[in-house]
Length: 288
Image 1 (tube, helix red, strand yellow):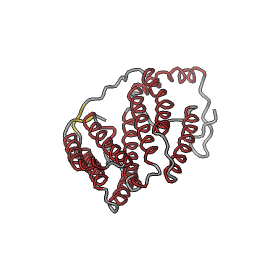
Image 2 (cartoon, one colour):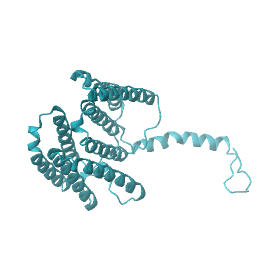
Image 3 (cartoon, one colour):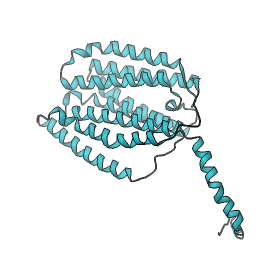
Image 4 (tube, helix red, strand yellow):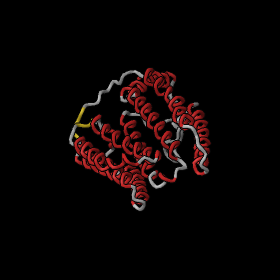
């Protein structure tokens, strides 16, 4: 063992057999202490919800791609999905799991991405050439995503032991409360803009949402003062976000169908979503 802790210094002497064996014997205890602070079952649940969300996203894309009626609205939908990705990663890291690592599953993911990309390209050209694609065919990419990626997530839930560390409910900090209200305002504006359908507002708001995501992502990596909402949100905050995201996805599908009469209820849904987010901001979160 050639150790040189100081430049120019002589190598440290190799440890004796007894010391080396003591180090090896300690590996199990070190691994146990590490696992004690990791909730792998909670992280697996986040992975499953991630797969379901991705499947819904891909299904909406499959139905809307190539449709001129939703081309301006799609940026808002993408921005909301990217916001979810950030929140989900924060929640996963809140369980003590850092990074995804590389495994053979990545080969399956890469192959699936190629298949989905080809399918979406086909749907895009079908849309711009007025070729009718049956609805059940457009459901295949989302179902394939749910099947291929969902089963490993379910298996992870079944195989992971319960967490040794329980998370207590705690009042959100003032920064987390403010950030929750801001996200609620963004989701509310997204619902209102998509419902109104103003051709100028749609791309402008979508661009602002993208820039907001980028700014938040950057600020969270250069400053520790940014609240990690995904790690501290509990079920009230996640429920408000899930409902607002579901409303945005539903509006996009309504626009694709061509029957826009339901969009008249968009402002009412926007007001309800804002009240949910504001109310959840003053409820207890998770001690992340």
